Length: 477
Image (cartoon, rainbow, N blue to C red):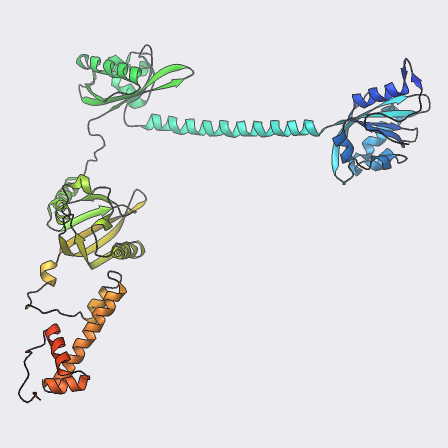
């Protein structure tokens, strides 16, 4: 006996005015899953409303002849017993049952029963709850997302309201049509004098002196028309002090509003104690170069001596540029210097070269330190011109070689091949000097000791500036 997906295979009988096929089609259309049970709860027929559900219960043919109780999950068996026996078999009550699929997964089905015929048979109607579960899950996710967004919005509103209230500058929100105050922070309320508690709802013009009101009105008109406007100077009505007024617009619930900010001129400048102010003036005028960079190595500020050494037009052309643009003959020098600062916090007497914009080179001695500013590291450099000190007057053709200590200081500042050449020259000169000393300044004997021809020795003596190049008596031949 075959079991089609959407109809029952039952003998052709009539149910009222409907034959068995019509009744089976009606039952299949009314439920996602339909079962016919006998009086003992054994499945005698089964049908599904769609192919997808039939595939999930691919083994539904094996249900025939089995108690319905054995085809559901263990936790659902008491519900199945209630539906298939006693008062539950008379129908009218829906119960959630976890039906076991062919792969062993639990599928939620909402079942109810209805008696059919006089032989104690029961028709079981089932509705697949998975679409409803998915909708419920999506609803829960959307609700949780809305709650998270609302929480973030409330937190942001709290932060900005605290910022608004604690701002030392007067800040007001104005109605875009009437230019009346709709909200003001405590600093703005004080602009209205004795009636500061009643500042909300008053025209903003009352906060300014009579001669300044036209300028403020023009600013608001410009911002309203173009979306922006230049700051204007105005005088307050309360004490006559001069202030800077700036404005911007925003919309809220379809209404245009102004955000008005009032600040003292040059309010961004920090007032320093007299001693600190004198120290800054000293740094600006000191003949040694002084420069401050950020953690990225870009110049924040520099004094006049530094600007002069690098041949720049002014500080504006220097600010924001990387320091290694002018520091060091090799690019690695600045990297080594910044690495020392990050690791040790300070550097003393670091010898390097400043390169000017027009080719001038200045030998400098650098002392640097790391300081914290606003949670970020900044580097301060003091540079002293030591060119005259490290370049003594020398005879023509004299090219001194470096000592081991000087060569060590060059590591990280010049390429390895240059270091090797300098080291070779230093060793060669020391050997020649030692040979001349052992031979009593006899060139021929010194050349023999060194394994050189006398002509080669003379070339090297000329190169290192080691005395008279002429042959001594007794050397000829």
